[in-house]
Image (tube, rainbow, N blue to C red; front, side, top):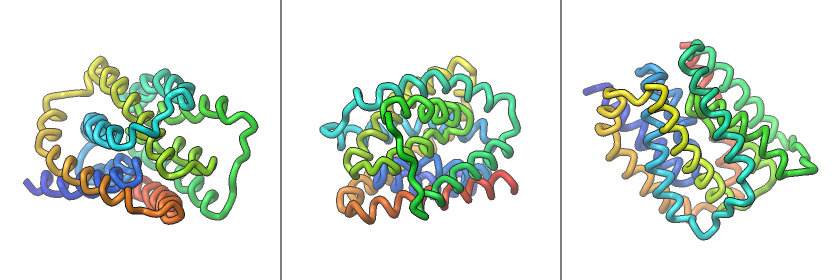
Length: 241
C-alpha cells in the first residue's frame, strides 16, 4: 500500500506538469519511481499512461497540430524505438539513467546560458533528433528531451510547442505499446499497477491542462528549461542510488 501511495503522488504530480507543458511526465516519473520500482516495470506503465494523457491533451490543442512539419521526426523515432527496447532488455538500467541524465542536464544548462545551435535545414534536423528520441523512448521511456531541447532551441511558440510535442508523443506511444507487447514487456503486473495509478493520472493531467492555458509565453519557456535541468539531475541521482 505504501508503494502504491507513493506512486499515486508521483503520477499525479508528473501528470499535472505534463498537462501544463505537454512534456515532463516521464522525465519526472522515471527517476522518482525508479527509487521504488524496477525500470522494466516502470517504462511499460508510463508508456500506457502517456498514450492516455496525450490523447487528453491532443484533443485540447488539436487546432494547432501540423503533422506535415514533424513527419520526419515521427518516422525516425518509430524506426529507432524497437532498437531502444532491445537496449532496455539487455543493458544495465542504472547506467542508462546516468547517461541520459548527464546528456539532458548539460544540454539544458547550455541552452539556459544562451547557447543555441543554428540549423540551416530544420526539416532534415528532425531525423537525428527523432532517432535519438526513439532510442530513449524504447529504452527508458524518455523520448522527450531531444525534441524538447530542439523545439525550444528553434524558438517555437507555446501552443505550437504543446501541439507538436503532444501529436508526436501520441503517435510514438501507439507504436511503442505494440513494440512492448511483441517484446513481452506488457505483463500482468504492469496492467495491475496501471489500474491502481490511473485515477491520479487523469486528475493530475486535467488540472494541468487548465493551468497550462494561463501560463504566459516567457514564463513557459523558462519553466521548460528549468524542468529539463531538474529532471536530468533526478535521472542521474536515480541511477547512482
